[in-house]
Image 1 (spheres, rainbow, N blue to C red):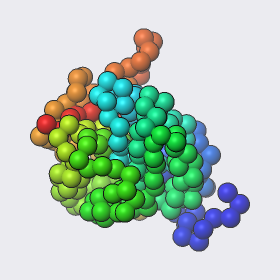
Image 2 (tube, rainbow, N blue to C red; image 1 turned 180 degrees about the vertical axis):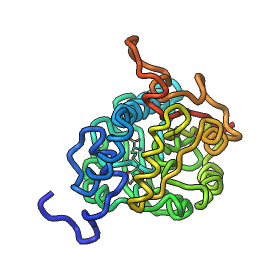
Image 3 (cartoon, rainbow, N blue to C red; image 1 turned 45 degrees about the vertical axis):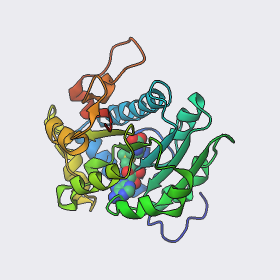
Image 4 (cartoon, protein in one colour; image 1 turned 30 degrees about the vertical axis):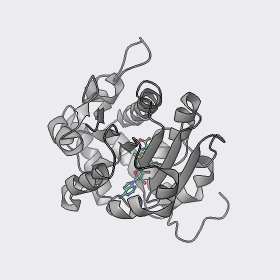
Length: 267
Ligand SMILES: C[S@@+](CC[C@H](N)C(=O)[O-])C[C@H]1O[C@@H](n2cnc3c(N)ncnc32)[C@H](O)[C@@H]1O
């Protein structure tokens, strides 16, 4: 972008831009690359983790729009537009799918046009908001306009919860969001873990040193936080690479990926 809105501070790293750098996107700045490179220097398979996470997101949306018949998505922590954005994947299966995207990075807002290319049968909207204020997301006019809360909705919290440390009360945030959804709704979530590779500690350390809140969780902590009270879809909480893979080839190990994911249905 030649001219950036003044609220976009390119001198400070931001997770959306660091992730974009890691998965091979074009929307990042020197400050983002510097912290991302610190992380990758200590945790070389961090890029594999990002790519596998993004592929998991695509498979989860295809599953929901296909097998589960979901037509509405609330995607919090959207990230910068890339290939296979949620509405593109969902509308390829069901063109009437509706998606509300939410992120707190003003750079995502600046690029949001790419998220608003809905099929005519469906709808998309973008809200700049922070997951710390879930009520603001739920009561935003765009959310209410695009999503029908009397019908099942898939809440997408993909690779965002490791940016929500315990002091922010993530359990309360999840409860507020899930309480608003009707029975038959789904949650998709993924989370970086330090359980299998000590090098992943660099993710939490470098982020925090750069002023980005970050917290690794193990599989039990993640499952308790995200999926308590929900019915996990098989295979449950697993490495994102092992969640319903759609190719038969070899997959990276859990240590290389170090990201858990799961999909669950609200009873
Ligand atoms: C690693 S990216 C994940 C992008 C996408 N969900 C995916 O999995 O491919 C995490 C995203 O969460 C966003 N994010 C981090 N903290 C947030 C917060 N407190 N409120 C809203 N969004 C946040 C970042 O801006 C970033 O775009």
